[in-house]
Amino acid sequence: MGVFPYKKCHRLTRRQDFVRLSHRGPRAENSWFIAAFRPALGPETRLGVTVTRKVGCAVVRNRIKRLVREYFRLHRHLLSPPHDVNVIAKAVAKNADNATLFAALEDIFGRVGKAASR
Image (cartoon, rainbow, N blue to C red; front, top):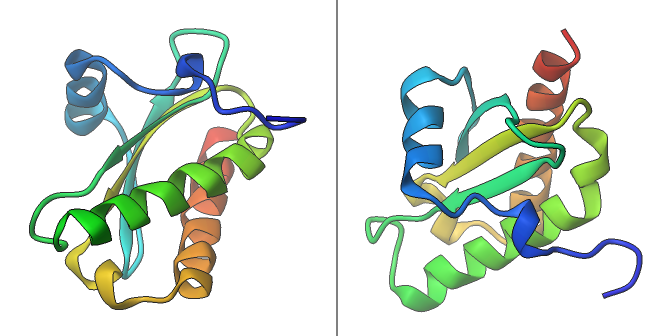
């Protein structure tokens, strides 16, 4: 795992956490993703990924989830103070290549980071 592990404590796992973000959290959006976020209740920044069947088959959905988790793993330290973030993929994300999705994630997490530092 090395320097940037992705452990269970870095994941949103309970439904109530996802509901809390979707009902009360501010949002950042671009052409490929929507991110709902709030200050974390614990000491770690946590990530949830939502990719519905509208996006594509299981292979496509899992590819997008892997890319989001990998981006988060490498850039989690930029979100300070800790936040809970739920990244929701839009249907157009299935046609994008990896570089485009990484650029879109950089934009989304940049917006979350700016809002977090306020």
